[in-house]
Image 1 (tube, helix red, strand yellow):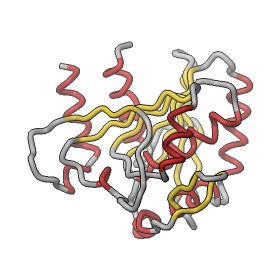
Image 2 (cartoon, rainbow, N blue to C red):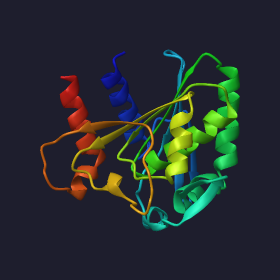
Image 3 (cartoon, one colour):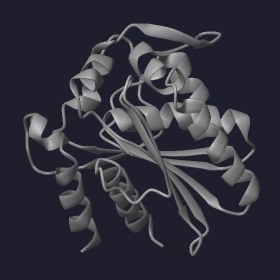
Length: 218
């Protein structure tokens, strides 16, 4: 499968997790932190995809605005709101325990991690954690991600040989420009140009990403 088709497939997973009728094989939801994550097991194509839901509620908005950094490890500092929503969630241990069982049971399956917006930020944080815990290739393809951590976060993430990260961004989407306070992006950038010169919040919508990716397929 070509790279653009894989990207479009990951966008479908990032879109599906928004639905209350999502098709996740295993779905985890925390009402307190508003974390929602799905594990999709594709036995036919030997693939496991983890998809994190993006910003949808007022609580998510508060998480997005909680820009104070928290120490992750040594000099590495990451966005406190993103970190706490993921790793302090009451569902995290159940979710990660299930994923560990799947990884150990399906050793030859390809692992993908995806998400849109807030979900993209969480996907980067989780990909980093997963790459530290397992000697496996973690394919992180995310959409419209805000910045997640400091320069040491970027250096450590990008130096990991078992993370293959692609950050897909619409050129006029303003969210990837945030937060600014010495935060950095990670992974390789794929910019989708929609012709707009100015930034528009509507261009952050997952529908816009879908339209532009489809144009590249056709």
